[in-house]
Image 1 (cartoon, rainbow, N blue to C red):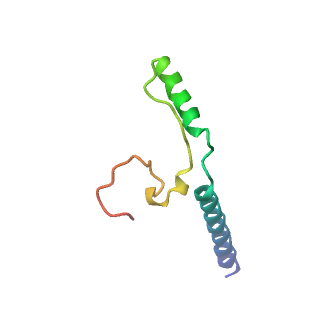
Image 2: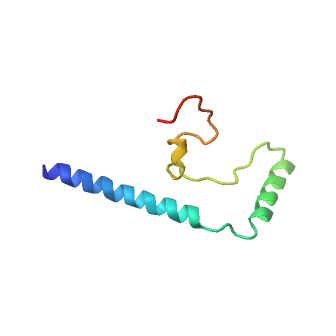
Image 3: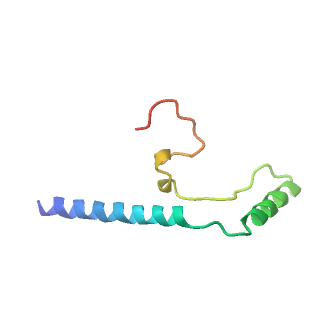
Length: 80
């Protein structure tokens, strides 16, 4: 019984941390020069003949609708 309480408490703490991280991520304001920085990144990639450039990366856990999958994946059925 004590192990179950400990496991539930640990899960609650993890869920709370995830919630706090999500809130912090969603409330942050975009830096004013982000458009300039992204444009410079894309222009540099194009000048080097690249077709892709990594502009942003974030953990999938911050996007609950993605259910841990790529945010570009196409889902045809209902969410789990």
